[in-house]
Image (cartoon, rainbow, N blue to C red):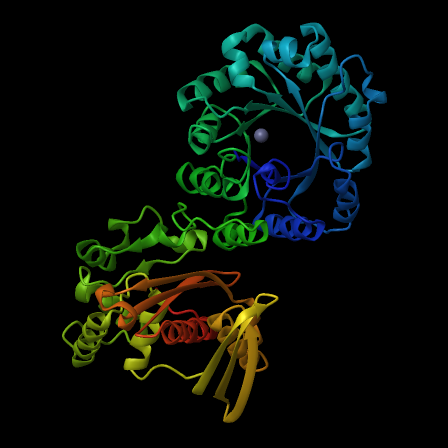
Length: 525
Ligand SMILES: [Zn+2]
């Protein structure tokens, strides 16, 4: 069956992104997750340019991988140096992987003006490096750097670099849009010429400088390329690399070209979140397929239609990629949005049921006080459950106290004390923190972790304070929004009060209660 090999370069090209650096442990964890997802090749590092990578390749050899082949990445030998004597080529071998990728120049101007050598010498470097690596028993991917720009400048020479690579025994010829400026129509026509002319597998490697990387990768596959290189979430230098998280479902669900085992597609959202967490890059909630907003519905009429039949405003079923549908409640959305939340808890209730009306009245009242639930889905789900008497309480807060002391010492200026009842047991817990909310958060977690260890996975990812009716100065109400995340998803909770600490405390409690409710059995929605 016709299929496309997904080739991930998050740990090599992705690691070039500003602000991203992976420890050896980070890389090993990411490799295991990518392997579980079913990625065919993982380009894990450049042992020649980074000595840290050699230690890592030794460790990676110990992993038992089900799907992925590990690739060590490097360049052709240097000008005037025999492949067997080139230091970079030697370190590629030291990485001890079954497969390697090497990049070489395919744009004549890059050879003469950047490399400053002759066009013939460049061909020798490509051919002899590949021949040498094949003699050592390696599978070889040849990355033709700047291939599309090179083809436009001097098509004959660009093709000669590929001929040299193929005749030296390369297993894949990967065409690179290194500067990311090529458009899908050109990618398609040029890739097609290459596919028609060469017998070996053709690959595609795109950068996102014109925001075309995903479209370009898909265009290349439509033209016959069967290896797609990219990174998770498109992380990479400048504007990033082609985003595999979009490319994989595009190819598999839309074009019917398998990239990963079909049962693994639901790992896509958790893997995308996991990688952004480890890379310490803010996750893009607007990301197609995997973002929180990808299947969120707000407008009243849209919600009405989506609840009747999701196909009306969704291009795929979110569950296919491990994502979930969100119905956002707001005044515009009105009853229909709320109704779907109520039905998720109790399917027997209709829009004219007394319970539905009671909840609606209650929410109107809270909205009048300054609550806004459309961006606080966690809080609204809790509220609906509580009002329907379907919420099993996990803990009971008796009281809390905070003290703020300035100047701070080592960033610590606050202490908090809470009194809480868990499983009939009264606990008093204190903690210090950087600000009163941080101290409260720590005290609450400390009190609960013994009973609910999963709380350790929860991270506060965003904290927003909005002052309402600001003309009343310090007496004004504030609305706090807290975004939290675990390894699976993120959720937002809210609190309103005239006091910012109290508003934060309410949002914080909701955040923890929501997590515990999620773990108990994830509510449909
Ligand atoms: Zn690249």
